[in-house]
Length: 389
Image (cartoon, rainbow, N blue to C red; front, top):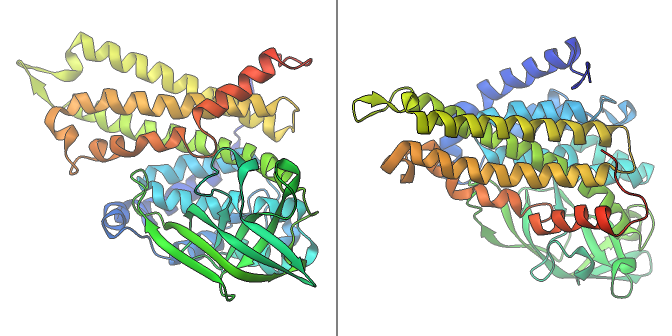
């Protein structure tokens, strides 16, 4: 464990690069973007020019050929900008909507969609969730019928990040019967007839996020836009979810750290009953507990990063543990820290107040906490191969 986490000089140089970008391009605009319920498309181009969208991808497509440690550093530093909507939008582009193209897409799809996405020239969205299918991916009903050299798609998606501005959607559709074996993934360009953006949604966790409903009405897409093999989409999504859940763990930890930093700074300034709050034993001990939990959450996330980077067969359970613990800890930290601010913690003018109002979303996205617990319990009790730690 002497080299854990394995951060060296190159990691530190990358961290400084992202920190500078965040301080310059995100933090000064964070509140304004939340008020406007949007962040500018220019941020994608800027991040693309700095190479943030291809960290783990093959240099042949403009990537850097690195690993999840760099993705983790990217998230840790972006979260210091205090605008979750922007971070989530960028990470959809960096990992969630493009990973499956890199891993399973044809050379033609990589050249047409992955390469410009890595450059920040085309914006990506991931279309999996439906009104009746969230964590239960096998229940999606959006249908794709083969008609010659095209798929004809009908159905809807909801809670789709980057949906209004996206140039394409990595879309989960049903090309076969019910259940996990009937799902495929296709690249759906947003400019084609039959693609419609519905109601704009407003996540309380990520106010600047571009999130909406999508509708497909006899939407025709070339069959060549199929990602990988037909009816293998569920397998691809489950593989993809490991990276998405790790991303959510890092985001949750970053969120909790910003809340803790703000609350501790305020505790050193605010006086009650003739003394600083930071001098009261009850608060000193509460912060000691929170700081201990934060370190535990961060180290568990780092451990999951190590296992996923090594493609360890047991990585799924550790990623699930990290996502579960980090998202639930972020909620606990937010509730505790609001108390430090008293009435101000209940006002939108307070960063901690705003942050606490939306923190519940972390335990829902990329699989609920209940799903994470089920994955962990299944591995512990119902498999012949037990995870060893």
